[in-house]
Image 1 (cartoon, rainbow, N blue to C red):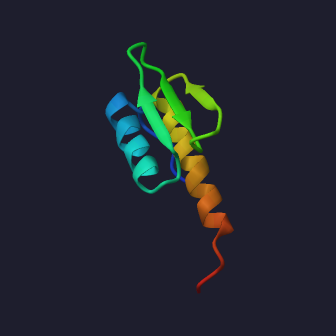
Image 2: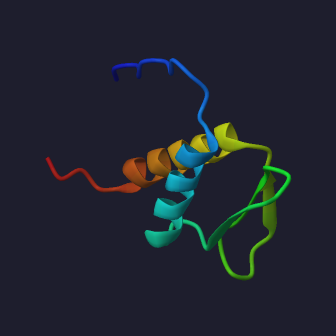
Length: 78
């Protein structure tokens, strides 16, 4: 596996918002809400616990984790 290049900057609120929107639209998260104190509230399932993410970097990290989990669970199609 080839390592990914490191980021040149920290994720910002717009990037986190875009990732949160994609995760919710693709039904990989039930909800993601940006709060006035710049935290994110996310919920995997309607009846699941609400998690607090402290900022944009945590949202991007969650997206990467979900993406990795989704890709490794897929059967090989090659």
